[in-house]
Image 1: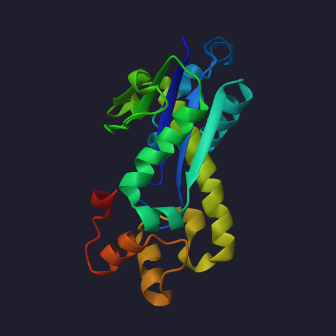
Image 2: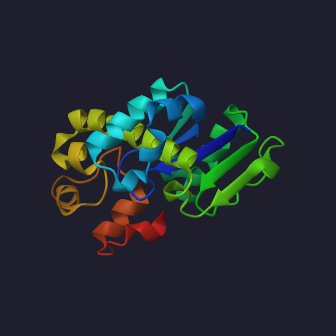
Length: 200
C-alpha cells in the first residue's frame, strides 16, 4: 500500500513562508539503510541528525513533494486558508492509497481523494512517513530562511528561522517589519501578546 505522510513547518513563525512536504517512503530501501528506526519527531532532532536523515530520505528513492505558501498569500488570505491549501496542493500532486496529515484539519473535497485522507494528531511523532515529511519540510524551509537572512540579516533568521525569539522581536521593534513578515503575527507581538501560536 502506498501511504503518503504530510506535515507542515512554519505555521507559528513571525516571518517566512509556510512549507509542507508529502513523502511516500520506499520501505524496503529504507530498511536496508537502517535509517527507518532513526526517524523521529523533527522537533526533537538536532540539526546534524535531521540534515543527515533528510539526505537519506531523498537518496532512498522516496517520493517527495514540497509546497510553499508565500508570506504575501498568508497576509492576504490568512493562515487558516494557507494551512489547508498547502496540504490540498500536495494531495493533488501525489497518488497514494492513503494520505496521513499531521493535525486535526478537515480538508474538504480534494479531487475525489477525500475518503483516502486521514488527519492524525501528533502523527509527526508516531507515523514514520509523517516524520519523514516533517524532516523534509523543516530542512526545505530552513534553507529558505537562510537565504532570506542574507537579504535581511538584522533579524537573525539564520538562527531563529523566523520564529518569535526575543532577539527577533527586538529587531522588529528597532527596525520595523519587512515584506517577509506576517502582518497579523507581528502586530500581535508588538501589541504585547506574545502568544502568537494561537493565531496559527
